[in-house]
Length: 208
Ligand SMILES: [Fe+2]
Ligand SMILES: [Fe+2]
Image (tube, rainbow, N blue to C red; front, side, top):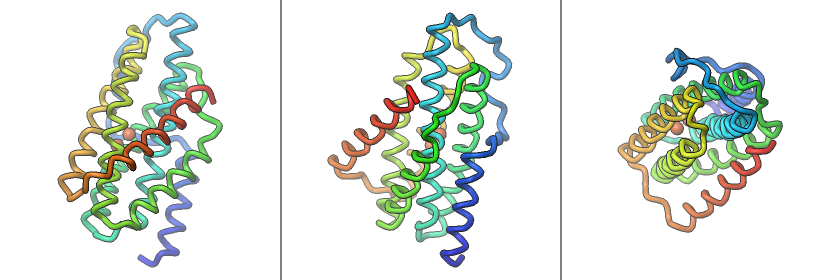
């Protein structure tokens, strides 16, 4: 596909990600569970953590789009597209949970999306081995981050916990697939830079 067409599709995808509700084929995890009794503090903690996770999923959408734009091999593009579909479901789940908690999404979403798209496109330009390695490392760090959220989420918020638990399973699967497709292990300084970058994002999105 000519690059201009890919850019137009990418731009259209960005607008849809930011402006329209995401769709899910799988049922929302914890859908059938009753709403837990949360006090004000617990509710605001759940809302803030789910906003952080929603931002993470906005970033995932943009990263995958950016990477798919510049990935060279059709097999890699297919892997990225498959994982991106699950990321769209995560986006839908977190979005819905924030609404159920009467919370709000991050006002900085266009900024998170733009930055992540650029990083994804750059990773894609480095070649498929590094592109997949970057994807795997991102997913590993997300999996660890979600484990941290499962410790922080109020115990009686079973609905949020069910969503985060399923996301954690999916993200770990994305990391395994990316390595199986030939991803390279990234140099330690790059991994550390990624950790610093994502920590800025998660700390900011907790508040705004
Ligand atoms: Fe995700
Ligand atoms: Fe993922």
